[in-house]
Image 1: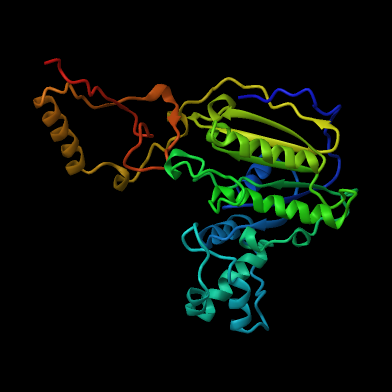
Image 2: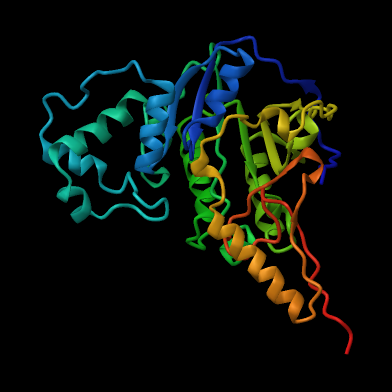
Length: 343
């Protein structure tokens, strides 16, 4: 789906100022990696990530050389208090105070130092507008990514949605609204708002059930002075041999317009990017292969006409689905025929 609007901006957005990157729901920092790959210079300004494993991955990928002990001079209790509500072990809920206080001094200091090295503020629920330290917007361009959780937009999340006040993981989008409101209230001239906002999420964001919430979000951004542009893009149309479609939202502060890139021919297939020397532990065990063969024989004996045969999928990988065990397709591409014989 591509946006059509009568209210596009009148100027093309061009930044000739140093870039400061803010990443909410940062994960391991894929946006920072993308800028690195593109050779675009930037300063990693602030991030928000609460999952301990992702915090460690982000630090190792982007700040491996930072060995400063930021916890020096702080008591263990003070560090534990700061971590409360900011970190998670299961990606779904914050660690309890009891869980944090059970961790050793060494572990809490390691988590704290990883976060400080990355300017990581932790859970988005703990962040306030001034924490992003947006300043001197006449000298810097602030680019903020806010790709909020997708689980409750997808079928795998039982369609819980992202409505304001829903309490869902996808509903954390509205924490971004709160932060932007706080920034806007601090300076009515808009000099504390990021000039560019970008988010991506699953196509279900534009599904009939979620569309009202999506449009409410766009109206909110418009009220803050942003022009919004959104489009569904597929990775296979931009040089990546994977059938992965996502909705991208670009919002520009001021009277600016944006054109999404045109598709490019797919020059590489999955076989071009796969490793040729793969450890045997990644292959199916003989017992697993036999299980499939036995299952096929059983279904055929029942007259179901069932068959199983791996295919190459045209050399383009499918996107891995979230709900294991009930996937209609996956990167192990299969041909199936479940039609039963007529009585």
